[in-house]
Image 1: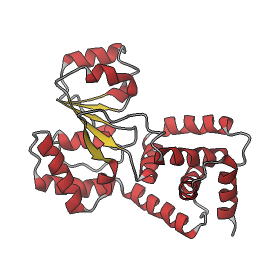
Image 2 (image 1 turned 120 degrees about the vertical axis):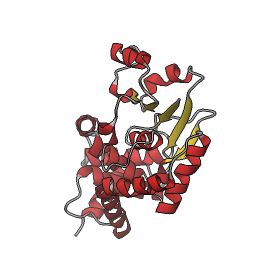
Image 3 (image 1 turned 45 degrees about the vertical axis):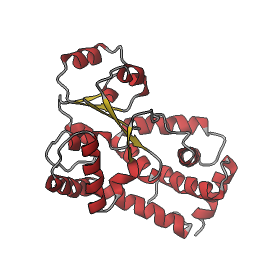
Length: 253
Protein backbone atom coordinates (compact mmCIF):
# COMPACT_ATOMS: atom_id res chain seq x y z
CA UNK A 1 0.00 0.00 0.00
CA UNK A 2 1.09 3.57 -0.71
CA UNK A 3 1.32 6.40 1.80
CA UNK A 4 1.67 9.94 0.43
CA UNK A 5 3.39 12.12 3.03
CA UNK A 6 3.40 15.90 2.78
CA UNK A 7 3.21 19.26 4.48
CA UNK A 8 -0.41 20.50 4.77
CA UNK A 9 -1.04 22.55 1.63
CA UNK A 10 1.38 20.56 -0.55
CA UNK A 11 -1.25 18.89 -2.76
CA UNK A 12 -1.02 15.46 -1.17
CA UNK A 13 -4.71 14.69 -1.61
CA UNK A 14 -4.39 15.60 -5.28
CA UNK A 15 -1.54 13.12 -5.67
CA UNK A 16 -3.61 10.42 -3.95
CA UNK A 17 -6.42 10.99 -6.43
CA UNK A 18 -4.01 10.59 -9.36
CA UNK A 19 -2.17 7.54 -8.00
CA UNK A 20 -5.44 5.87 -7.06
CA UNK A 21 -6.49 6.07 -10.71
CA UNK A 22 -9.49 8.29 -10.13
CA UNK A 23 -10.82 10.15 -13.14
CA UNK A 24 -9.64 13.73 -13.68
CA UNK A 25 -11.56 16.36 -11.73
CA UNK A 26 -11.27 20.11 -11.31
CA UNK A 27 -10.97 21.32 -7.70
CA UNK A 28 -8.88 23.59 -5.53
CA UNK A 29 -9.13 21.35 -2.45
CA UNK A 30 -8.95 17.73 -3.59
CA UNK A 31 -9.42 16.59 -0.01
CA UNK A 32 -13.12 17.30 -0.49
CA UNK A 33 -13.17 14.56 -3.16
CA UNK A 34 -11.64 11.86 -0.95
CA UNK A 35 -13.57 8.60 -0.69
CA UNK A 36 -13.16 5.68 1.73
CA UNK A 37 -10.35 4.46 -0.54
CA UNK A 38 -8.18 7.35 0.72
CA UNK A 39 -7.45 7.43 4.46
CA UNK A 40 -6.45 10.98 5.42
CA UNK A 41 -4.56 11.30 8.72
CA UNK A 42 -5.34 15.02 8.86
CA UNK A 43 -8.99 14.16 9.50
CA UNK A 44 -8.16 12.69 12.93
CA UNK A 45 -6.84 14.08 16.21
CA UNK A 46 -4.08 11.51 16.72
CA UNK A 47 -3.32 7.78 16.43
CA UNK A 48 -5.45 7.02 19.49
CA UNK A 49 -8.50 8.75 18.03
CA UNK A 50 -11.20 6.01 18.09
CA UNK A 51 -12.41 7.13 14.66
CA UNK A 52 -8.95 6.62 13.19
CA UNK A 53 -8.50 3.21 14.80
CA UNK A 54 -11.89 2.11 13.51
CA UNK A 55 -11.35 3.37 9.96
CA UNK A 56 -7.78 2.07 9.78
CA UNK A 57 -8.70 -1.43 10.88
CA UNK A 58 -11.76 -1.58 8.63
CA UNK A 59 -9.09 -1.66 5.91
CA UNK A 60 -11.30 -0.14 3.22
CA UNK A 61 -8.60 2.29 2.15
CA UNK A 62 -6.17 1.66 -0.71
CA UNK A 63 -3.90 4.64 -0.15
CA UNK A 64 -3.03 6.86 2.82
CA UNK A 65 -2.87 10.65 2.67
CA UNK A 66 -0.55 11.61 5.53
CA UNK A 67 0.13 15.18 6.70
CA UNK A 68 0.21 14.88 10.50
CA UNK A 69 3.48 14.22 12.35
CA UNK A 70 1.54 12.55 15.18
CA UNK A 71 1.07 9.50 12.94
CA UNK A 72 4.71 9.06 11.87
CA UNK A 73 5.79 6.28 14.22
CA UNK A 74 2.55 4.35 13.73
CA UNK A 75 2.73 4.41 9.95
CA UNK A 76 6.45 3.74 9.60
CA UNK A 77 6.06 0.66 11.79
CA UNK A 78 4.10 -0.90 8.90
CA UNK A 79 6.66 -2.58 6.65
CA UNK A 80 4.07 -3.02 3.90
CA UNK A 81 3.76 0.72 3.26
CA UNK A 82 5.60 2.47 0.43
CA UNK A 83 6.10 6.14 1.24
CA UNK A 84 6.03 8.97 -1.28
CA UNK A 85 7.35 12.18 0.25
CA UNK A 86 6.35 15.49 -1.36
CA UNK A 87 9.42 17.55 -0.53
CA UNK A 88 8.87 21.28 -0.03
CA UNK A 89 12.08 22.94 -1.23
CA UNK A 90 10.79 25.72 -3.52
CA UNK A 91 7.60 27.37 -4.82
CA UNK A 92 6.88 28.61 -1.32
CA UNK A 93 4.49 31.28 -2.62
CA UNK A 94 2.29 28.63 -4.24
CA UNK A 95 2.54 26.54 -1.09
CA UNK A 96 1.44 29.34 1.22
CA UNK A 97 -1.40 30.38 -1.10
CA UNK A 98 -2.63 26.78 -1.21
CA UNK A 99 -2.52 26.62 2.58
CA UNK A 100 -4.39 29.90 3.04
CA UNK A 101 -7.14 29.09 0.56
CA UNK A 102 -7.68 25.42 1.44
CA UNK A 103 -7.55 25.73 5.22
CA UNK A 104 -9.25 29.06 5.98
CA UNK A 105 -10.07 28.16 9.59
CA UNK A 106 -6.50 27.18 10.41
CA UNK A 107 -5.26 30.22 8.53
CA UNK A 108 -7.54 32.53 10.50
CA UNK A 109 -6.39 31.05 13.81
CA UNK A 110 -2.79 31.51 12.69
CA UNK A 111 -3.43 35.17 11.90
CA UNK A 112 -5.01 35.74 15.32
CA UNK A 113 -1.99 34.14 16.97
CA UNK A 114 0.39 36.28 14.89
CA UNK A 115 -1.45 39.48 15.82
CA UNK A 116 -0.65 38.73 19.45
CA UNK A 117 2.85 37.28 19.00
CA UNK A 118 4.00 40.19 16.81
CA UNK A 119 1.99 42.92 18.56
CA UNK A 120 5.08 45.08 19.20
CA UNK A 121 5.71 45.48 15.47
CA UNK A 122 3.92 47.69 12.97
CA UNK A 123 2.71 44.92 10.65
CA UNK A 124 2.34 41.70 12.68
CA UNK A 125 0.67 39.45 10.09
CA UNK A 126 3.00 40.47 7.27
CA UNK A 127 6.03 40.08 9.54
CA UNK A 128 4.94 36.60 10.63
CA UNK A 129 4.55 35.41 7.04
CA UNK A 130 7.88 36.98 6.09
CA UNK A 131 9.49 34.95 8.87
CA UNK A 132 7.75 31.79 7.58
CA UNK A 133 9.15 32.33 4.10
CA UNK A 134 12.63 32.82 5.53
CA UNK A 135 12.33 29.65 7.60
CA UNK A 136 10.95 27.68 4.65
CA UNK A 137 14.03 28.58 2.61
CA UNK A 138 16.25 27.18 5.35
CA UNK A 139 14.08 24.06 5.87
CA UNK A 140 13.22 25.12 9.42
CA UNK A 141 9.47 25.62 8.95
CA UNK A 142 8.72 22.22 7.44
CA UNK A 143 7.36 19.71 9.96
CA UNK A 144 7.24 16.62 7.75
CA UNK A 145 10.75 15.36 7.06
CA UNK A 146 12.14 12.87 4.56
CA UNK A 147 13.10 9.46 5.90
CA UNK A 148 15.30 6.75 4.39
CA UNK A 149 13.61 4.83 1.56
CA UNK A 150 10.99 7.53 0.96
CA UNK A 151 10.36 8.11 -2.74
CA UNK A 152 10.85 11.84 -3.14
CA UNK A 153 8.56 13.92 -5.36
CA UNK A 154 9.42 17.65 -5.21
CA UNK A 155 6.48 20.01 -4.70
CA UNK A 156 7.90 22.01 -7.63
CA UNK A 157 6.95 19.14 -9.97
CA UNK A 158 3.29 20.16 -9.75
CA UNK A 159 4.10 23.45 -11.47
CA UNK A 160 6.20 22.13 -14.37
CA UNK A 161 5.22 22.33 -18.03
CA UNK A 162 2.84 19.63 -19.29
CA UNK A 163 5.28 17.13 -20.80
CA UNK A 164 7.63 17.28 -17.80
CA UNK A 165 4.64 17.12 -15.44
CA UNK A 166 3.35 13.94 -17.10
CA UNK A 167 6.81 12.35 -17.28
CA UNK A 168 7.38 12.96 -13.56
CA UNK A 169 4.13 11.19 -12.67
CA UNK A 170 4.90 8.30 -15.03
CA UNK A 171 8.31 7.88 -13.40
CA UNK A 172 6.77 7.92 -9.93
CA UNK A 173 4.13 5.38 -10.98
CA UNK A 174 6.85 3.06 -12.30
CA UNK A 175 8.65 3.23 -8.96
CA UNK A 176 5.40 2.26 -7.26
CA UNK A 177 4.55 -0.51 -9.75
CA UNK A 178 1.48 1.39 -10.89
CA UNK A 179 0.21 1.69 -14.43
CA UNK A 180 -1.01 5.21 -15.12
CA UNK A 181 -2.34 6.06 -18.55
CA UNK A 182 -0.41 8.83 -20.30
CA UNK A 183 -3.66 10.11 -21.77
CA UNK A 184 -5.29 10.22 -18.36
CA UNK A 185 -2.29 12.09 -16.97
CA UNK A 186 -2.62 14.68 -19.73
CA UNK A 187 -6.28 15.05 -18.74
CA UNK A 188 -5.27 15.33 -15.09
CA UNK A 189 -2.78 18.06 -15.98
CA UNK A 190 -5.50 20.10 -17.70
CA UNK A 191 -7.82 19.64 -14.71
CA UNK A 192 -5.08 20.55 -12.25
CA UNK A 193 -4.25 23.75 -14.12
CA UNK A 194 -7.92 24.78 -14.02
CA UNK A 195 -8.25 24.00 -10.32
CA UNK A 196 -5.05 25.89 -9.53
CA UNK A 197 -5.75 28.80 -11.88
CA UNK A 198 -6.31 31.37 -9.13
CA UNK A 199 -3.27 30.17 -7.18
CA UNK A 200 -0.98 30.28 -10.23
CA UNK A 201 -2.19 33.73 -11.28
CA UNK A 202 -1.89 35.11 -7.76
CA UNK A 203 1.63 33.71 -7.39
CA UNK A 204 2.63 35.39 -10.65
CA UNK A 205 1.21 38.70 -9.42
CA UNK A 206 3.14 38.41 -6.15
CA UNK A 207 6.37 37.67 -8.00
CA UNK A 208 5.78 40.73 -10.18
CA UNK A 209 5.45 42.81 -7.01
CA UNK A 210 8.78 41.43 -5.80
CA UNK A 211 10.43 42.43 -9.08
CA UNK A 212 8.79 45.87 -9.12
CA UNK A 213 9.55 46.38 -5.40
CA UNK A 214 6.04 47.70 -4.83
CA UNK A 215 2.83 46.56 -3.15
CA UNK A 216 -0.42 46.80 -5.08
CA UNK A 217 -3.67 47.89 -3.43
CA UNK A 218 -5.40 44.50 -3.52
CA UNK A 219 -2.68 42.60 -1.64
CA UNK A 220 -3.65 41.36 1.82
CA UNK A 221 -1.26 41.38 4.77
CA UNK A 222 -0.27 37.73 4.35
CA UNK A 223 0.61 38.26 0.69
CA UNK A 224 2.69 41.31 1.61
CA UNK A 225 4.50 39.04 4.04
CA UNK A 226 5.32 36.58 1.26
CA UNK A 227 6.90 39.44 -0.68
CA UNK A 228 8.86 40.75 2.30
CA UNK A 229 10.06 37.24 3.11
CA UNK A 230 11.52 36.77 -0.36
CA UNK A 231 13.35 40.11 -0.09
CA UNK A 232 14.65 39.03 3.32
CA UNK A 233 15.97 35.79 1.84
CA UNK A 234 17.69 37.67 -0.98
CA UNK A 235 19.27 40.04 1.55
CA UNK A 236 19.97 37.23 4.04
CA UNK A 237 18.33 39.30 6.75
CA UNK A 238 15.96 37.60 9.19
CA UNK A 239 15.13 40.61 11.31
CA UNK A 240 11.72 42.00 12.33
CA UNK A 241 12.85 45.61 11.99
CA UNK A 242 14.02 44.84 8.46
CA UNK A 243 10.56 43.43 7.69
CA UNK A 244 8.98 46.73 8.77
CA UNK A 245 11.51 48.64 6.69
CA UNK A 246 10.69 46.68 3.53
CA UNK A 247 6.96 47.05 4.22
CA UNK A 248 7.33 50.83 4.33
CA UNK A 249 9.55 51.00 1.25
CA UNK A 250 7.25 48.80 -0.86
CA UNK A 251 4.22 50.83 0.29
CA UNK A 252 5.64 54.13 -0.97
CA UNK A 253 3.75 55.42 -4.06
